[in-house]
Length: 184
Image (tube, helix red, strand yellow):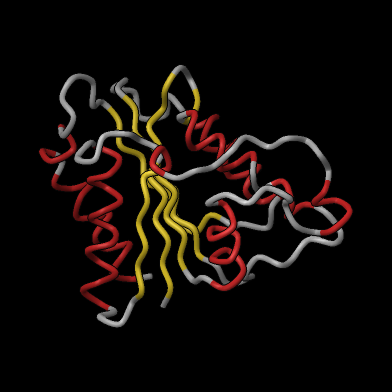
């Protein structure tokens, strides 16, 4: 099993990363042979889409940056975990940059994303209202689907306002994240 975790938060031990790592822990427990790569998006060299339309002509993005290894994974990988906090009413800038660079996959000449790719979306925010960002989640799921990426599960972590790791007190959420990873 090939797993890629992309974390759109700069906090290495923050709420989003903690939930993503709990999913990974569940995967590792069930599948000892899983090949797992986990990246903080802000540490990768991912340029913005240049709107050059090279991908329309060739089926591939012309930019040579770290998205190339992500593209390879999307075509052959098994599980994608995409985690982002909500900043300013949407996913983080790092996460949005990743989503924008999926543009090559909506064109006729595009390579195919693995049709069996299971995607887990992790979204966290400070407001303690459970459905506060359901519209954002719905939008992200729609945009990913345009790119032939279907979201298998969504985990919402909310009400984490001040401390980086308030999620550690939410045992129910962490157990759920672990179970999702274990059962994938």
